[in-house]
Amino acid sequence: MKTQRFSCALSCWFLLVSTSFAPAWAQGQPPGTTVRLNDIDMHYRILGSGEPLLLLHGFGSCGDDWQPISQALAKQFQVIIPDLRGHGWSTNPAKTFTHRQSAADVLALLDHLALKRVRAMGISTGGMTLLHMATRQPDRIDAMVLIGATSYFPAQARRILAASIDKFPPEVREMQQKCAKRGGDQARELSAQFTAFKDNYEDMNFTAPYLTTIKARTLIVHGDRDIFFPVSIPVEMYQAIRGSELWIVPRGEHVPIYGPRLGEFLTIATEFLQRKESR
Image (tube, rainbow, N blue to C red; front, top):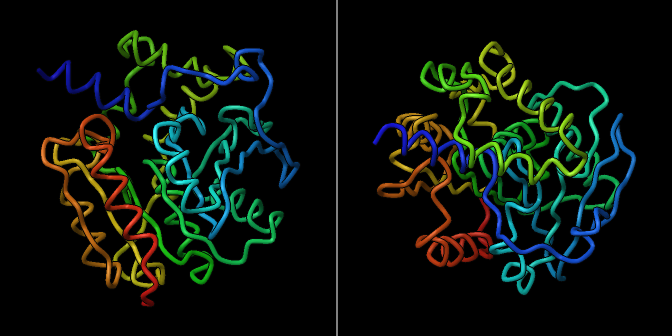
């Protein structure tokens, strides 16, 4: 049972994608737009029209994370889907990754797109990037949905991060490789960066007083079987972020929105993001 849960959680961490790809992807060509900002080439796609909705994927993954729901969301919003630094089609010459730097990159992308204020959803690392964005520029995010995110890395997460990628289940390694659009070197770099999180105590270190500076309406979605981040952490975030809402998903793993919960999540998240109430 522990092995099965470990496999599922890591699979959710690295990549949750549909099995179909557009023809351009199959030919090895980026399907969207690439822009030079900070010190990287950032790839992104825009779907639909309306109020802007930013979608940020999890670590080791890419914009593919959102394929199961991106078209549905594009009927309601203008959906912006970037590949974070070093992920998917985006580059990362520095070969290091922090959520703080990721936030700076995404804010630079919003500047490039002349978007002063957005709604947003983030999976795991995407959610942690949003925490940095929402505290660094509190007026930039109107509402956000944090999925399997954390305000800090607890001991249990650091123990898993210390595991060698060679010990991860084959399906996890396969999923990671599918999103390494630039090949094996990229996959190895991401694996090293993932492991390095275990030694970083500064990047994700949000105290309750700091979280109170967040102005964005916030929905926190968390699985009660998350082996990285125990339920106590999203509860702490819920208590600190004023006016936030908390959905603990029964029997949910690290990213609890896919599978049979997908339709329910899409309904709840869309309703939350479309509200016009202010904080």
